[in-house]
Amino acid sequence: MDINRIKEDILNAKTAMGIEFGSTRIKAVLIDSTNAPVASGSHEWENRLDNGVWTYTLEDIWTGLQDAYADMAADVKKQYDITLKNIGAIGFSAMMHGYMAFNKDGELLVPFRTWRNTMTAEASEKLFKEFNYNIPQRWSIAHLYQAILNGEEHVKDVDFFTTLAGYIHWQLTGEKVLGVGDASGMFPIDCSKKDYDQAMIDKFDALVADKQYPWKLREILPKALVAGENAGILTAEGAKKLDVSGNLEAGIPVCPAEGDAGTGMAATNSVKQRTGNVSAGTSIFLMAVLEKELSKAYPELDMVTTPDGSLVAMVHCNNCTSDLNAWVGIFREFMEASGMEVDMNKLFGTLYNRAMEGDRDCGGVIAYNYFSGEPITGLEEGRPMVVRTPNAKFSLANFMRANLYSSVATLKIGMDILTQQENVTLDCLMGHGGLFKTKGVGQSIMAAAMNVPVTVMETAGEGGAWGIALLASYMKNKAEGETLDAYLNEKVFAGQEGSTMAPDPADIAGFEEFMKSYVPVLAAEKAAVETLKVNS
Image 1 (tube, one colour):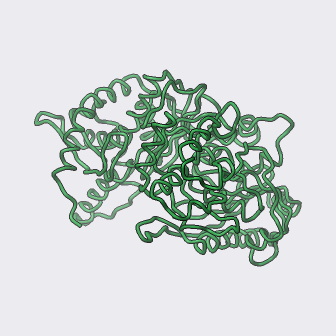
Image 2 (cartoon, rainbow, N blue to C red; image 1 turned 180 degrees about the vertical axis):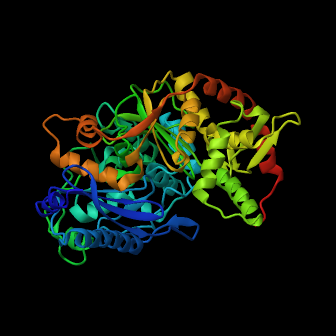
Image 3 (cartoon, rainbow, N blue to C red; image 1 turned 135 degrees about the vertical axis):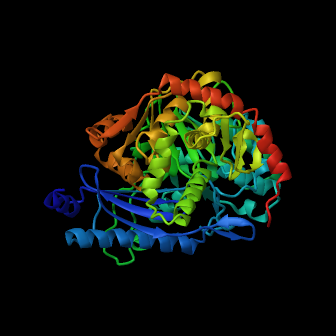
């Protein structure tokens, strides 16, 4: 690390900063002229269930933002003995979707309804039929339409509605704009125009015309901007809101605010068509950047965009490693009961690597990792299960392999829609998250399940705050006509170390055999949900 160069970058504002609001942590990252992180800060927070609504208060939002920034600025002071006063460019990101509605005076009309709420089933279903386009319950337009269906009094007073990232951006710049990737989780995007789909906007306006609201939909949506466009500057008032110490100067350019899906694509260098990324932890989701639109709408697939407006199909599953981790916990308990000292990293590594010695089809052992419901397979609740025939080859290796297969099996069902029904081809997938921590294991299983080479980069753990910082850097430093894909390839990821695993034909065949049993036996999982009740 060249401390003197980093100090020069900070003093001369050759930096960019990203702040991302995750579901449990707000993180701030400062990057230098090489796009490498040089300082960071964070703030822990939790959503709350208030009158049946999952929400964060405005106080939660501002306290968290200010604390994360102050923590990052303190890190700059500690490492480089510099009081942070100027930054080259800034970007804000947050969990996508949800509903923040304001009146003409800028007052929040109802508590922030986050993506986690599942109160919009009626609106989601009706809009799917109206648009012939999948509108998941968490989308902003589903929340607005459900409020209309519910006859909520506040709807007539809506002057502007946006996402959490859009709200932060508006408050700090005065601009009612939003990055196209985040906007694509509010309302469907026409990728040919990098803007909201006008035909669907017209349909929505016609749908609610009888209500005689004083607004039209486009008037209350934030303007959609693509990566690289200037989205305003940090105002004097905004600088004081962000940095309560008063040291930060106004006038800093701010890039379009983005959602966590878009920043994840930037942070994994997967914004180019025919690429994708898969995040595998407590939940699992895959983002595939498409070359063309799909032939029809599928309820299993969310359609969003990259930060520069390319169409993306997203397969989202609620369950990934929770049950796997629970089984590792059982082995830990056994070791502790036997008087052995437990190193969890070693235990995970031992069990994951033993799985690779199992039969490719798991020898007749099947596992279901459903801690919670799973929309792709039509389950509103989950019951973790392991099932086998009496003559199955029940070994530790096959047991662990079945649990690892289970962690990606539902994702494969969604991916098969893309590859088998829509003939989508991906050249590579970037893998990140806890499933990939044990070298080569989760990576090889993912490659076999998806039938796509999987790359794991050393930088994959940097996360969305780094991703939005990269988008801010791109806006400020891009050359004339330089695309986001080119900028990431040449200015950020060139020379980065990573490992790529191609799918093994024998593993592909084994996974397919596993799925031949997994899908029909889902009937047993459904029966377990119906008959095995959860004690309250």
